[in-house]
Picture 1 (cartoon, helix red, strand yellow):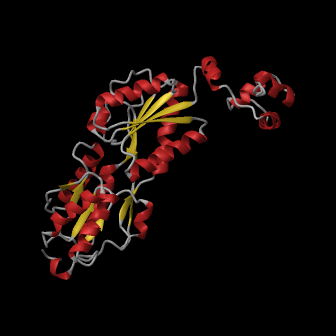
Picture 2 (cartoon, one colour):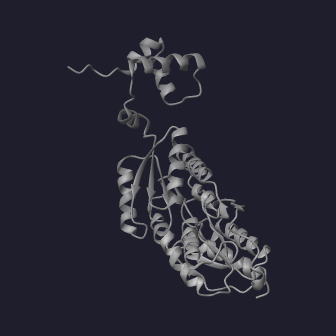
Picture 3 (cartoon, rainbow, N blue to C red):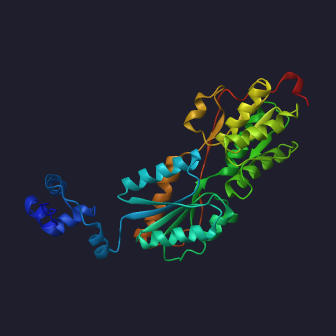
Length: 344
């Protein structure tokens, strides 16, 4: 027959403390001495005691679980942020329950919120990769701690507090880098038009060109994938005056590099290419990709910190967006334009 699971009182008896002290240790209470905490943890380990989370939730009205609404798991950037969130949540003593839904289906997003609430999560983090996703979050009851991850421009600050990269600044960095090398203008492969982050990167690129008094070419549109970058690259290759391309993410930049290689145009000899994200693989491409780096781990830490602040302090009016500054990482995919193109 199966033996009964050890109880909290048995842990207390073995450690020589009260059951209230064991509860304080389990709940990471600060007012427990290091020696007492060590004895309790040793007793928990010896008995293989597993806290009854359901019972604790009923007593504390806290599940120590955070809901995370995600979308396209095939994209490297969001996947890196999901990993960072899970690590930051674990360090803060929280579990993460993930709901993956289509980003442009408002009803699916609302259903995900309902399912997570039924699991009694303490708060919800949600990616906002599309305008539909951001709008759907505005219908979440204000009593629920909620943080969005995505575009952070002040014009989009209506709704839940938001954590994300300063996309405009990153795009401007990429564009100014290419102009400083001597390129007459910079072409752009943008992300999906319904994606606020893609729109911000396009805006940063356009503003940097206008500020420099340079012509603004028509942007080509992709869907964040390498395949869409390849298709956009094929279109750009048809124009022999193109010497510099800024891509909205690294995956599309990889597709552009392939298209250029397939056409016999060298990088950076004929065309310079800049990406956005600084994925781990970009340093090992041929040539290594110049890109805009943003700290996925910092996005995870800040979003978790902001959500836990709402949970523990019962604060909801944190609508000011948190924009994390990116930086330019220069590698071998950018160089001055060919001499014949320098005065185009």
